[in-house]
Image (cartoon, rainbow, N blue to C red):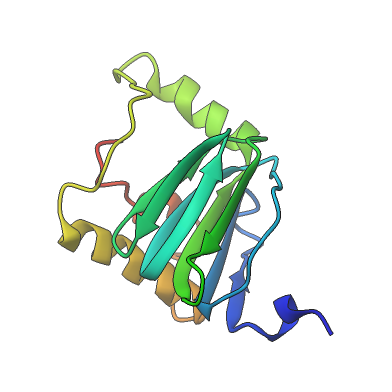
Length: 156
């Protein structure tokens, strides 16, 4: 049996948000080969450390770090040898993201510079929302887009 099937993880999807998928993984030692996704990927490290190679550059991430991986960027994220890590990974449909950016571009100055969360509190608040989604406790208001609930306090 594949180890991937035995790690504690949960996927969250909602038909009202077809452009979004969330994966939460806890205390995993699972390593992943170089791969890519067609979606924009946003990862939040909750516990432990991970070595992430993205577009040929290595990043060592630890609890409290956030990484944004562009669509189709080859990457691998693996725990340091003999350790585990817990994380949330949010995937956003590329076409949906581009439509949001097009709407913003007339009124917002966009930057491609890497950013970090301004405070641990902002990071914890965002991860708390993702956790509520992953354990089925988040509630979406009828007729309202839930994206407004997912904030990017790192300056986006």
